[in-house]
Length: 73
Image (cartoon, rainbow, N blue to C red; front, side):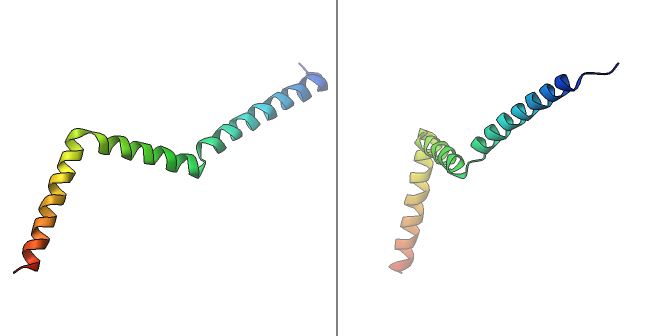
């Protein structure tokens, strides 16, 4: 069964439009600035958690004390 050329042309245009939309979405998702902003917010949210925050404070204090001990020996 042969299809008429106008129907084929219309299907090609629809496929082209769908592909262009998909490429636009991929371009927005792969935007380096957006990726950096997302990573920054994720890290900030993780560091705001009390168990992570207090663990880092403890580790920083320990390192600071060790450095002071090394300096004054």
